[in-house]
Amino acid sequence: MLRGHEMGVGRWLPQATFAGAVLLLVGMGRPLRLVGNGENLVVFTWFGGVSQTALQPGLHWVPPFVSRTLIFDVKTQTLTWKDGDQTAYAPRLVALSQDGQQIRVEATLQFRILDAPKVYTQLGEGYLDRIAPIVRSVIINETAGFSAQALYSTQRPMLQGQIREQVATLLREYGIEVLDLLLRDVDFDPDFVAAIEGKTIAENRLAQKQFEIEQARQDARTVISQAEAEAGQLQAKARALTQNPQYLEVVKASVLGSRLETLVTQ
Image 1 (cartoon, rainbow, N blue to C red):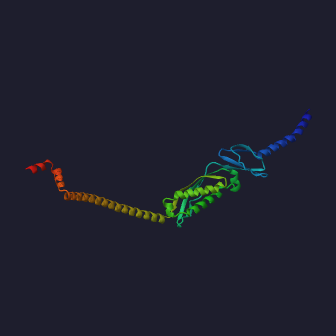
Image 2: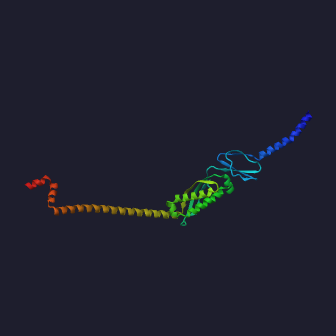
Image 3: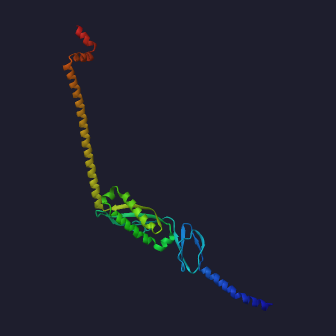
């Protein structure tokens, strides 16, 4: 009986060893992938290439040994150009205005990935390094369409809108949605700023002087109009006296009243 039991164990041992080895290899191949919230999983297989459908949050089985997977963050991401900030992608961007003035721009791009497989296929794992040159190029090109004085005064929102629209159009082709693009700060050459501020002060003083002159003219016109009105009244009274002698008696009566009658009767 013992010998028969040993023979049975000997018969099943190779199969158990093989099954254990298979399970070990499968475990080493990590066939199960957990995708967290705000993530998508891109799957590449040696026989099928990149799957066009990303795996959503949850637990998924992928073919072991013949697959490669990559997690993509599909939450809102930012790409910032700022001086002195270790979390920024790079320092401020430098661009030239239409009139050749150097402008340094602090910018932030807010975006999210809509199509992770397309991003992986067209931009690769280091997609940030592919997005950044696109944004930088658009900022430089669009800034060149404005004068420095226009950007210093009123047209900065227009520049920001044009940059946002252009970047959104370009990144949409790669499966990326632009949520916003902000020009948080724009620096100009100090000499240029001083010149603009001096010009603004001079223009404000000139405008104040012109206002004061116009106000004086208006006051003079008012005085003249009042004088002309009084002169007209005097002329009308003079004509009335000339054309109607009895008018003088009416005036006397209105001034002297009953005293006039007393004086006449005495």
